[in-house]
Each structure stands twice: as structure tokens, then as C-alpha cells.
Amino acid sequence: MPSNNDLVLVIPPILEVAGGAVRIDRDFANNLTAYLAHFDRVDVYCPKAGALGSFPAVVEQHEIPGHERLGLHILPQPYREDRYLRHRLAVGRQLKAALARARYRLISPHAPLSWSSLAGRICVRNGWPFDFEADWDLAGTSRYIIAQMPPGPRKLHHRLRFELHMLRYRRLLRRSSLALVQGQDVYEAYKGIAPNIHSVLNIQITAAERIAPAEVEAKAGEITAGAPLKLVYAGRASEMKGPLFWLDTMRRLREAGVRSEAVWLGGGEELETMRAFAAEHGLAGTCALPGNVAKEEVLAAMKGAHLFVFCHMGYESPRNLMEAVASGAPLCGFATPYSRSLVAPHGGGAFVERGDTAALAETIASLDRDRPALAQLVRACARSGQELDRDKAIEKRITLLKEYL
Image (tube, rainbow, N blue to C red; front, side):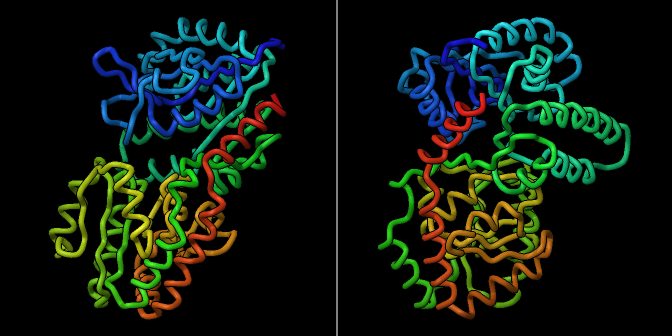
């Protein structure tokens, strides 16, 4: 085993390139800052993002403390058979050399034909310990995506490629020395496969960003005074986030006579479909769809929200739910082990079965009728949010890396 204190990460895209300048996802840059404080050198191997603007905010390498000990290595895009096969040998040699030099190895096999999966197989062949990281239940989510596709050769191709990938994915999980999986959904999916699995969270909320006690009480007072419900969602407008389920919930609330002001903050491929649905069902006056906004605006909206309404259809651990809890915006949406776990410490959530927009609308309407109960839900949520801290979360992950690798 190498005697150094170096860390190598082979991961999904966390950077973009614009005019020759490399810019890093700001949230991941926070993690890199912590890694650089605990490891002598950190080397990141990943493809660049497919398009500029893929991340809400970015920083340049020189802005990261310890950046002189950080190596960013941009790999070719691998996610199609022809591209993967064209570059496989060269990338394999590059990764093998890097993984051989480092003492600590972190991979995240996020998709078929990913370089992270190749790095895992290299570690297995050479008997090198590695950390397997995952932030979604790949099998559950992929099966849902494939089920939504129309019948035909494309659907068959995706299904076959997925099944092959899952065989390799589970093999790497079984051979991992450590598996750090994000949230209870992913933990429940993989706990019977990985021999040394731990549930962690990729928290990007600092103590300064959490809602203050005075803000909690101001919001509770606004609720009990009878103000229209402020309903917020912040996230990508993509099918997995259930945007049409969310809008259908808003439609049901309007028909039930609930006074509300709703906003979906975030762009994506489904945004125009959402706008068309809102126009067709007369939601334009009560439901705003502005697209992408800055993180600061998102956090401000969450702190002002009476409920964070979500209709996620995937099996994952989205950070927006953590941000909502830390902002004192009670979670109200489709139940998952992950969403329930976030408010388990002190409460702060109301959940229904996945896909049941009628039940979700009635849950919101019942809270609208019982304003003291909703105000207490806000207070409980804010108390649960005190458990979420960026620095403590990354310290836990680093401690596990050093203990088991």
C-alpha cells in the first residue's frame, strides 16, 4: 500500500470549461476545501459538464484554499459506446497510474460506460481498497425512467444496457472496502450488497445559512395571522422531480379554494411543458415558474416558505430537501425513507404516498385550515434543521475514508 496521504477521485462531471478556464461546481469546491485540509494531495478525474451553466454557481481553482495541491484532470466524454471504446485504453492507463500512486481512492459509478466504473474494475483487479459513493438508487430510478419510454428499439437498448451496468455496479459494491451512500433511500437499496456501508449526507448548508430563531417566529406569526400559503419548490424541472404532479397539486388546491402563492424555482427540459400546463389550467395568477435563480434567492424563498412542496419520482437524496429543512420550510410531499429521515430528529414534515396528488392537496388544505398546527410544524422543522451542518457532514465522510482505507 502506498505510504503517502494522497486522495484520488474518479467521479461524474463537477467542472466546466469556458474559454480555456476551468470552473468548478461551487458546492463540490466546498468538499474539495475539506479534502485538501486532510490530504497531502487531491487529484480529481472526470469529464467536463456537457454544457455551460450546468451548475448553479462555479468557482475557479485558484479560489480554493490549498489549490496548489489540487489536480484537475479532464477526461473524454464516455457515455456512448463509440466514445467509450475509442478512449478506453488510454483512459484506463491514465487511471491505473493515478490509482496506483494514491493511498485513498474514491469512485462513483454513476452511469453505464462511466470512467468511475472502469476505475472500480481496475481497483478490483489489482486488489486496491476503494470507497464506492452513490447518491441515488440506480436500479429503482432507472427502471422508472425506462418504464416511461415508448416501446421500441431505443427502449430495448436502454434496458439491455442498464441490466449489464447493474451487474457490474453490484459487483463493485460487493468488492468495495467502504461504501458511502447518501441518504436513507440509497442505504436501504444497497445495505444487503456492500459489506461496509454507511449512510452520509452531502450537506452544503452552513450554520450561518440556517434560518434564525427570529425568522422562524416571524414566519409562524405570519401563518397564524392568516396570510395566503407560501408554497415553494426549488430544483430542476425534469421528469424525475415530478413537475406535472406538482402542478396538478396546485390545480387541486385552487379548486378547493385554498389561498396560496406557489413558485417553482429552477429551469430544465420540462419548464416549457410546465408553463403550458399552468396556462391551460389557469394557474398563471397563483403559480410562478421563473426558471433558474441564484442560490441566495432560493434560500431566501425557502426561509419565507410556509411549506416546501415536492413530488419526486426518483429514489435519491436531493439536497434541496436538506436546504428546505435548514430553512424552516416543512417538507410536504411524496414519502421516502430519505425525506422522513431528515425530519426525524424533531419533526417538520407531512407525507403522502408517491403519485397521490389528491392526498397531497388535501394534506396542504388541512394545514391551511389548522394554522396553529402549521406554525408548530415550521418550528419543528427548524429544530430538525439544526442537525444539518456542512462541516460536520464532510468531516464524518473523511473520518470514514481514513478509518477504512
